[in-house]
Image (cartoon, rainbow, N blue to C red):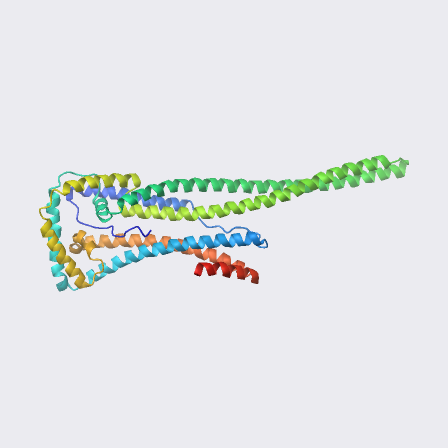
Length: 408
């Protein structure tokens, strides 16, 4: 996330004949991030705690290690998000400084910004050729020109990773359902064995009673029948006990496989959430629907830029006004002055400034939601470790040792 620059909203007023097309495209561009989040809401991704035999030293230590791994991953995500969040917040503070400056102090700044806006409009009138990207996309290309190639590759990787993660989640879900079905089948077989055992016991009692009645009433020799009955009963009992032992072994193995499936599912879910939110953020950042569109927009922008390079008659005057704007912004205490050179319209038009602020607030909200999610993951893992710590003193020592490595 640290590679995501936050300077992505250079606003200017649109040409009247482009308003309808731009509005339609921007509406489409807003749909994709929303669709990603809707997909995330349709498929809730909650972290599950594993069922581990805590009396088994190896299983307990391995489980604590996996909890620690989840904490570290969430902590790393939080650090990256906080860095980006700080940049967005810094930009919002600059806007506040500009808004709160007295009008007499802003007069020179607004005059220079207005001249920049007019000169820019005149220069763009010479650019008669229309290009297949919106103003929002063009501003993003201008802002992130140095890193857009890298971000295109990153987006392609994230989108490919998204498909793989969804495939893995489906596979793990299917595997977990099969294991649950196996557990039910083992329980059913065990119940059946108990029923057979009860029936066998009843049959043995009935047969013994019948033989005893024959021997008592009719003086029949029941030695061989009794021995045969006992032998058959013994064989059947051995078979039942053997099957019961196999079922218990199968149940232990199936439980271990279930825990493994839960662990892998949790890890994939965390990656899935972070990947979805990263894609959503980057789509909003570039005002595109996917990496293919971003690559197309970038190629169109490169082509347009080559043609715009031939039309620089007003560059000197614009540069002079830029220096005035920079000087006035520094005098007002603005931290990031250079970014305002590309969005003079926001300095002149209050509506444009509102758009800038709204975009930054949306981005900050997205970052805050992702931060809250990763913080929740950390809290859940720490809570689970705290539960284990409180069980026994020796468990507490193990937890302290692992957490000590995290704090170090």
